[in-house]
Length: 327
Ligand code: HEM
Image (tube, rainbow, N blue to C red; front, side, top):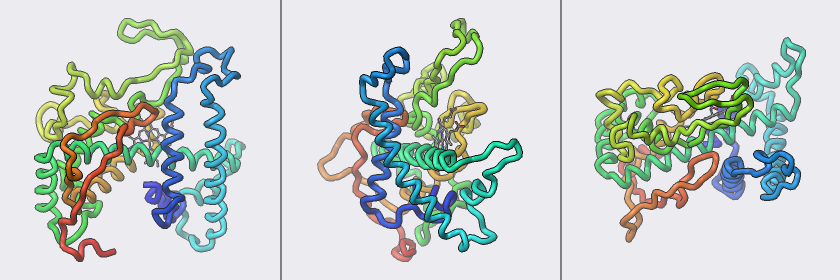
C-alpha cells in the first residue's frame, strides 16, 4: 500500500524489499493510529494535561522522531533524483514547485513532511484494514468468495491478472467493498470535529467548542437503516433500496470516508486501491482457513483505525494459469 502511494507522491516504491524497513513502517503507522485513538485524560482536563499521566504525549513524540528520520531520507533521495523526472513531475515535485503561493505564505520543510506523513499514514492502514476484513468475511462466507470468483472468471478469465479497467465490469466485487466499508469502516469514529457555534441536533443542545465524533461504525450497523445489519450481504448493494447508496460522502448511511469539507482527501484513490488490491488477491488465489482452524476471530481492536484484534491467517493457492503470475 505504501509503495503504491509512494509511486504517486515520489515516483518510486518506498520499500524495495519486504524487509525490516517496511515492517517497521507498518508497525509505526499502526502505533500512530492506535495512540491517536486513545482516550487522553489531558484533553478533557486541560489543567493536568502537562502531567501526561498516561504517557501518550511522550510516546507520540518518540514516534514523531522516528517518522522524521524516515521522511527526511525520502525527501533527500527525491531531491537527488529530480533530474530523472524532467517533464514528468510527481506530487512532491508539484508541491515543491509551488512552495511560495500567491498569499505570501510559504510551505516550509516541516509543512511538507507533515503532508507526506498525513498521506502515508491516512492512506495505508485504512485501505489495508478494509481488505483484511473483506477477506475475513469471505472466508467466513465461502458462497460469497465463490460468487466473486465466478464473476471474475467470466469477466477476466484465468489467463491474466486483473487490471484496473476490469473493475467497472465487476459489480459484485464493488458490492463486497461497500459492504465491508459498512460493517467494518476503517475509521469508526471519523476524525473529531469542534462546534464553532452552539447548535441543536435532533433535540440535543450542543454548546460552542464541543468536541464531537460521528459514530460511522454504529450508523453502519443501525437496524433502523439497514436490514440484518450484522450479516455480511454484498447483494444488498446490487439491487433494491440500497443499490444506489454510494460511499463517497453524499449518502450519510454509508460514509466511511467522512463527509463535508474535510472529507478524506484520498477518497477516490482509497476506493480504487481497495477494489484493485482485493480484486487481485481474490482473483489470483483460492483462499482457505489454515488446517485445524474452524472459527474465525472477528474481534476488533480499538484505535483511530479499526484493526482486527487478531490478524487474519489464511492458506492461499494459485488459481490462474502459471504465465499470469509472471512480472
Ligand atoms: C479505504 C481507504 C480510506 C478510508 C476508509 C479513509 C477514511 C478517511 C476518513 C474517515 C477521514 C476523515 C474525514 C473527515 O474528517 O470527515 C480521512 C481523512 C483523510 N484521508 Fe483518508 N481514507 C482512506 C484512504 C486514503 C488515501 C489513499 C489517502 C491519500 C493517499 C487518504 C488521505 C486522507 C487525508 C489527507 C485526510 C485528511 C483530510 C482533511 O482533514 O482535510 N486517505 N480518511
